[in-house]
Image 1 (cartoon, rainbow, N blue to C red):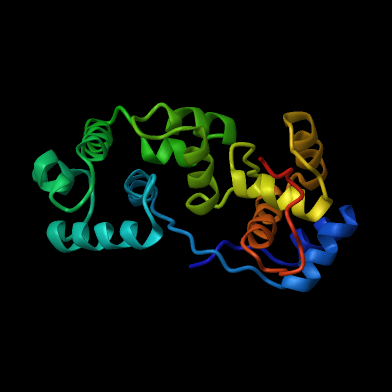
Image 2: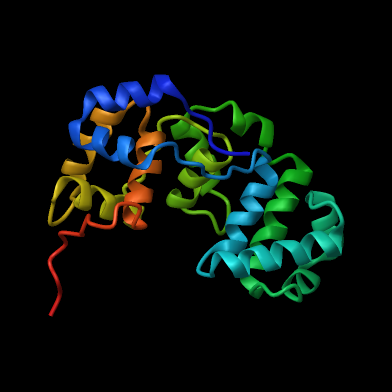
Amino acid sequence: MFFEYGKMEINYLRQKDKRLREVIDRIGHVERAVDADLFSSVVHHIIGQQISTKAQATIWQRMQDALGEVNAETILSAGVPALQALGMTFRKAEYITDFAERVHTGTFDLDAVEHMSDADAIRELSALKGIGVWTAEMILLFCLQRPDVFSYDDLAIQRGLRMVYHHRRIDRKLFEKYRRRFSPYCSVASLYLWAVSGGAIPEMKDYKPKTR
């Protein structure tokens, strides 16, 4: 399952920005996988912090093998030591267990978060242990498929902006200028900036000053 977007979003962004239009035309449709289940998405993101994508996938597979279905009840039944034995840190196992406890007791309402505004959902998610604002924004984009996510804290987004628009640095004021330009389809713009940052257009370079 991939992030859904189509002609409406593409046409809007192409009309709004000449350089982004060139990037869109060059790269074509971007496929980025999404996880539509909010519970597993939060667990996934906690597991994945500061480790490689491959290591994250390995630990997630071990968790599925060990627990069968990954939900609040199976995580609470397993407990912190069993989760840590799957290859994650003690702290991450604690964060995941705390999240499962909140869901189990109803103090964190998954369904309510899915229907909140972006700002409220980010506030609610980032109040969880182990989830910061950037992670909450990524959950909004790659789980809830919100259309207008643009993360200032994402270094790859900043790198993509420098590469496409030839900036030496991206401060908050400049970032907000692009947010206004791309809104209400910032999420799709993010997909293309990530692609550029990852080398999708080889001749594009980063204009960030080199440190000595």
